[in-house]
Structures are given as structure tokens and as C-alpha cells.
Length: 431
Image (cartoon, rainbow, N blue to C red; front, side):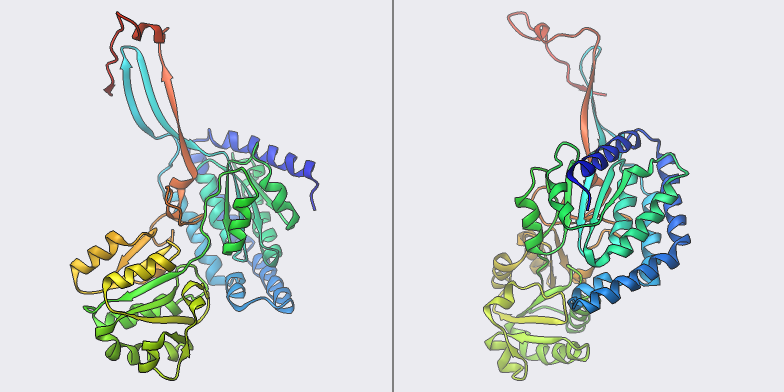
């Protein structure tokens, strides 16, 4: 474990490296991103072997099935993560964009220009490829990053960060811009470094995110639960509804954008439920239904009150019959986590009502909730998903890692000129 003073030194080094990174040209950052991709490809075998070791240790220690799925990093996942790095390299540079260019008065010019946040502290559980996504986005947006992966992904993260630093060594990005912490005790120390760290992004359980929020003065961006709903409207196309439900639950059940509750309009429940039950049970999904659902599907488990507020992250799905769109929206308001919600319907008015009234970062019509992902949105990758009301919201890519500053240039201008009886007027003319 690092001592507190050692952690401060690491944070200072990261901040110093980040300050230089913020001034680099787009081409220099893109060269560094390609160097990272090449280094990860070269270290592929080491990274995969490290992940196998992590998986073996985790199995011995009794890791939960959803967490184990997140921990696993196979050749395909690694290949996709490296492709994501290169996609970030192709994105427009978010730094240095002039958002406002305004003449305040003759010779007095105001600009609002995008700039990096500074240093990001990223604390994540299990999923080691998150480190790859986060570093590429941090470099592109001109930020330094201090990573703290879950203990279950320790060897994987060490192998990944070692490769990344090796790749950066021959670029204009100082490898000190990327740091890895390795012990749980360092999390609390990191949360106290508000002098050096500008944003904390926690990726983990609801309890963990709340712990982070309660123990730091640093701004926190992130989401806790991913309790996502799919509402099958009375005007749903049954074939579409079955296909989308199965994908939303089973394509990757450990993901935060997989559905946990299925809401079905009562007018189609008798027709739809037996078909969707067969389709889901073929995929080994355990179904838990309310009283009305049990009358149609008597062989499934009875849902408890806690099922409506549970993120299973597993092949378990709660089912409830509702009598109207209004009742479906009310249920989502009560139990949703403002992550991603979807409606299946051929009624455009119902879809527009749902999308207008449901308060979530993503509100979908006739498509799988599994699309809630920065890579699929064309962000190249994401540092996480935010369910907070203030932006950035949803999958957070480059735009969530920048801020802006106001730059003003004059020629001896003073405020006194613009006050008093003979006050001069501002021109406020956009250039």
C-alpha cells in the first residue's frame, strides 16, 4: 500500500503531466492513442494470462456470477476494446473549441474555449477493459487519470496499465499522466485529494457509489443502480416485443443496461406472456411475476415487493401486468434508476408520451435497452454512464471530460468607463 504522502506525490506527478498534455496538438494526442493500441496488441498474451489468473483467484474466493462475467476478458473483448481505442483517435478533438466569440466593446474580446478538466480519479469494479476505454478518452480530452480497479481485476489492470505506459513512453504524452492504484485502502486517500483530482467517476454497486459520494469533496459523476424497464404496450408488435425483450435481458445480463422488470399491458398479457415465457426460459431466465402474471403463468416464482427495486445483473426477470401506459410510467417513476427505459408499441402517440414523460438518461422506442453504451452511440468508448439530472447524462464520452474557460483580451479597458452618468454602452456583438 502507498503511504498518504506517496499518493500525494503520485497525484502531483499526474497533475503535472496532465498540464502538459492539455497543451498538446490533436495530432500528438492521436499518435499517443495509436501507440497505446499497438502496445496493447503487443501485450495481448500477457494481459489475457493475467486475466486468467484473476479469474482463478476470484473463483477460489467465491465471486458472484454477474461479477465474474464482468471480470472475464477474452480475446474478443480485448480486440473490441483496442478497436475502441482507435475509434477514440478518430473522434474530433474536444479541446480548444471556441464556443463563444464576442466583442464586448471595440477592442475588448471575449471567448469561451473548451479545456480539459485536469485529473480524473476512476474507481471501478471488475471489468478490466474499462481501464482501456478510460485511458484513451482521458488522453484525447487532455486529462490525466488515476485508476483504481477492483481487487478481483488486479493482475489484469496491472498488465493493461504496464502496456499503456510502455506505449506512451515514445510519445509526447508523459506516462505519468496514467497511474494505477492497487489497494482498497488507497480509495479513501484518493477521495481526499481534492487539491489534485478534479472529478471522481465511480463504477460499481449502489452502495459503493454512495460511499464515494459521502466521503469526498471532489465532484462525483456516475450512476448507482441500473434498474431498467421494458414496457410492452397494448399496441405492440408481438414478434418485435419478444425479440427485443430477449435481447434486452439475455444478450449480456450482467450489464447495467439489461432490463430487470418487464411491464405488460393487461389487454395483451394473455397472448404475450406464454410466448415470452417460453422464449426467456429457453435462455434459462428465471421469471418472477405479480399475482396477475401468476394466473397466466402459474409455474413461475411469485414476485416480492423487493423484486421491483432489485438490479439482478443476472438471468432473472420480474414481470408485472399494468392496465395503462400511465400505470407503466408511474411504476417506472417509483422504481426506475433513471438509466434506460423502453417502450414497445406501434402507437406513435403512446411512444411520444412515454419518451416525453419518463425521466431517464435513455428513453427508447422499439429497440433494446442494451444500446445504452458509449461505443454504440459513436463516442468511441465511455468512462461510465451518468444517471444524474445535470449533464453530462447517459453514456459519458469526451464531452463529459471537458469544461470551458472564459478568455478576455482588451487594450487598457476598465469597468469605470461603463458605469456612472456618462457610462459607455457595450456592443455585445458576436464575431
